[in-house]
Amino acid sequence: MTGKRTGFLWATLALLFAACGPAATATPVPSPTPQATVRLSPGPTVAPTATPQSASVPTPQPAPTSTPPRPATTAGPTRGGIIKYPITGDPTSWDPVNRLFENLATKGNVFSRLLSLWNDPPQAGCKSELTPWLVKEWKWVDDRTAQFTIHQGVKFHNKPPVNGREVTAQDVAFSLERWRTQDWLGPKFKLVEAIEAVDKYTFRMKASFSWGGMVLESLGHDYGPVVLAQEAGGAKGELWETPQKSWIGSGAFTFEQWVPGVKWVLARNPGYWKEGRPLADGLEFWVMPDLSTQMAAMRSGRINTAGAWGDPQAEDVLRSNPDFQVFRCPTLSTFPGNLFMNNEGPPFSDVRVRRALSMALDREAIVKGPHGGKAVISAILRPGMPYALSLEDLSPQVRQYVEYHPDRAKALLAEAGYTNGFDTVINTNRGYTQHNHQAVWEAVAEMLGRVGIRAKLNFMDRGRYVATVIQANYPVGEMGTSPVLQTTPEDGHALANPSFKYAGTANRSRVNDPEYERLYEQFISTIDETKRNELARQLQTRQVEQTYRVVMPWVFDVFVARPELRITGFRSSPAQENSPLFETAWIAR
Image (cartoon, rainbow, N blue to C red; front, side, top):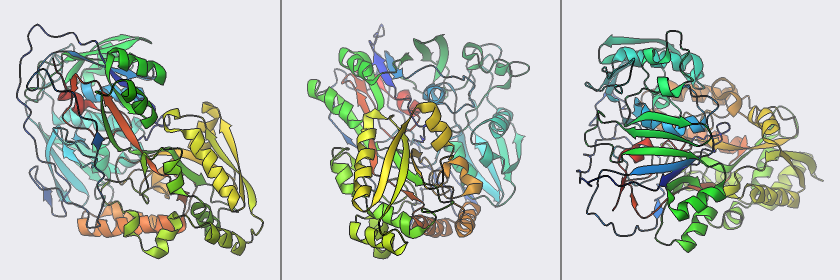
């Protein structure tokens, strides 16, 4: 999740509010029929019933943990009730191509995605796989061209000027063109030479070179495209910022009301294309910027679920409400973040110094201390992500650089000419209080001091922090902390990170490594899964060997629900893009 979350670093931690008005009659409905998950095959086509290919490298799959729910008063899923979820604030932009968290928290419920990183229906687990959504199948025409077929009979919401017409491949092509020119994923989509509707239900994307799964992963990204109706935006696109008029999608819920600074209201879409969904009568997103307010609302029943809390908040609520449900997965983003260092000059242009910095940190102590035992240690990619190497998958020679070896750290500093250490600055902010952000970086500074790296913590206000750290503008010789979003392996914070060409400002250590660029271009260019596995292994190994950034422990994304809310699965989402979860959630009565 993702995020990201900067504007993206990821704060739309919202709660689902309950005061659930029961329907006149509670009508039992059957559980949705599971669909097969699809991943890109090394062969020319991928059928929707194909078995997902797993990475050949062993990847530990962390099991989600949860507290058992209170026995339901109904035997199974029932229709009715309003799910209420808190958001931190109104979005600064309502345009659906915008990647703001507040926007993302709701748009997946109103608009349909092409692909998804959710299983359908949602399944308990912390692993994400690329899954069909509006697209029902795809295949490779050649190594530069992918062809997609969408479901037939899917209709937009019955609101003017769209009036419930059918979704076509032409709508998809229009939507992808908007994303290509306006959205933050634009750099990836600019690799696409052409997007065309082949017929009413088929479209193609052709890239400028062999592009493997790179843009495919972007289509399923939590921050990725949704399908728009061109006429909803007005003749000149002037209505995209007016959600009451332009938020006309084909998702499970329709947009009904926005009360600025108070709430957004969605209602069940009676014509939704997935039979039997959604179960709830509607969703209400209430503006609650303060965590303490959200916790009080959860206790009182004003809301019935909350996402992206930290474990301290969840444990606090559980003490007084032991029947509440808590679900945990390693978050899609590291909080409080990774430690980046400007590589363009000394001391951090010397790999020995970078390695010493990493080896000076006792990550186990950070997990047990500031994180209270609720975090996991990984190499480069988050646990559960395709291709992710665990620490055990690294050779001892490489693994040492992410282990605690203070004596070796001192020796490396001396070898690099810093026998007496050096002074530096860690630029950060005081955000992400739910994950004990300040305590983590205070512990890091203290550990660095033990080996002679005298790091001063520079807590910035939000605006200065974004302009300096998030935009990779901090001086040579200084460091910056930043949450790291990893939704797909190709993310700028994942395998693309040390790349100027593909990561942009996510390359916050300002790395220029031609060998890494060469390997990464091979990775995104091949559709051969065996080759992708090997290249992913080499990329992660090189990131650890060169220590371009210090990867910190991954905390848990915590989803809390009152006992009356029933959900069928949970997956971390940095954007709180929980729309598949909400489609199948119901209120037990």
